[in-house]
Length: 304
Image (cartoon, rainbow, N blue to C red; front, side):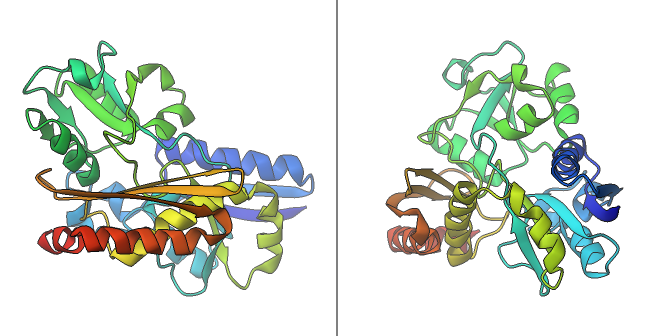
C-alpha cells in the first residue's frame, strides 16, 4: 500500500475539493492510501483584513507550498484562482481537473435579480474585481467589503448585515449551497476571476511517480482555459490588488477569451475579446493582454 500525503486549507470548500481529489485517487488506484493534512494559511489567519493588506496573491497557498517543498506533503490541492501565476521553484501543476461553473452569482434573501435591487442596496464582496464591475454598471449600489468562508458570508446576509452577496457559483455548488443562487451574472455584467472554478493539483517537479498518478484527473480543456486566463494575468502584471477578470471557453478545439481591467471605483473599464486554436492558449492570453494595454489598461493598473 502506497501512502500519498495531501495538503489543503481547512475551509469547508477546501476540504470538499480535497476530499473529492482524495476519493478519486483511491477509487482509481486501489493500492493507494491518501492521507489528508490541513494547513492554515495567512489568508485564513487574518480574516479581519482585506486580502491585499495581508499579502495579496499567495496568501492562501504560500504555507501549503512550503510544506510541499519541505517534503511534509506530496500533493497540494488549491483553488486555481488563489495560485500565483509564477510558481515557487521546484513545484509544478501536475493536473487541472474538469472545471466547475466559473460564473459569479448574486445571492439574496429573496432570490431576486441584480436589476431588482433598489438604489443604495448593500452588496457584500471582498473582491475588487467584482466591486469595480458592479459599480461600472450600477453606481447607485453600495458595495461593502466582506470576508470569511461561504457559510460565514451567508450568515451575514441572513442576519441583514448586507442585502446581497456576489459569490462564485463553483464554491456554492461544491459545498451543496446551490439553492442560494438568485442569479447567474453574465459576462456583460461581471467577468469572473482568472481560473475561477478550476482546481490546481500541485507537486514537486522531481516527484515523477506522483505526477503520473495524477494524470487521470487532468482535463485538457480546463487546462487550456486557465492557461489562457493566467497568461493574460501574467502579461498584465496584476494580482488581487488590481480588478482584472478573464473567462476562456473551449468548444471543439477553439478557444474564446474575454478580458476586463477596471478601476476600483468603476469609473473606467477596458474590455476585449479574442479567439483562436486552443493549442495556442498562452499566446491568445498574451495577445489579449496587449490589446487591453493598448486600450489603456496599463494606466488603470498603474493608478491602483
